[in-house]
Image (tube, rainbow, N blue to C red):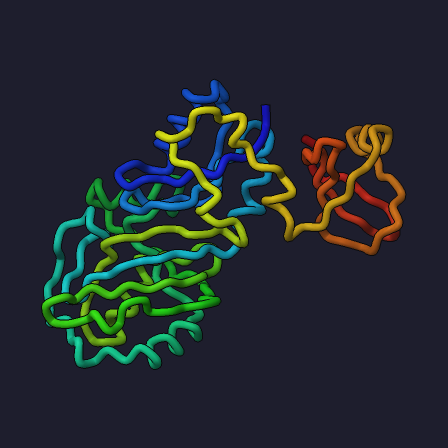
Length: 286
């Protein structure tokens, strides 16, 4: 069995907890997700079943959309509600300039990676090392903010130091770091109190289902063409697909392409390949 499920993760569980639960629900051991969500975060988690886990990197590479709320004037060790309060300061509401911060956010080229993150350092997760008392150093990561908008600037006050925003960002952008950066523009500190992933590429969380509402997981499987509409695809007949499965190329009347999905009659991905000089060559067969 292979396929994809769109899960609307709830707060309080890790991304791997979702995988663990799906293994029990489906009876399939080989399951992976396309982009970690922190335990306090909610929203879209795309999960691949069976051999389709080999396609995870193609979905992980897509831009991600989020809605987040930060609390000004208070930082935590983890940058989210799960950490201990590290510093308190004035929220500096008078320094808030929505237009200036938005423009600066859209021009960002890099952001720090939280020390409490799933980034691996010499084979170990950074957050595990930090919990063991081992201080880690992680180089800033290149980022791109494709869109950015404050959602409730008129509600911001000394009595309500909470600021919400929506953004679409490149792979590897940590929203906890973006919240801290926003506060720094106001010369204060902050931490992210809520975070929801609303989309991965053009796949919306509106199409996802919560685990506790999943009654028939097979009917929840998402067609491959829905997830990979950004990658060229071609349906080939059984004989042509068999040739590709044996590692050989087939002639096609198509322009060169670095990546193309080969689909069977049911719309399932059977081969990931490339086209060069009128020939479709297999890279990965499923």
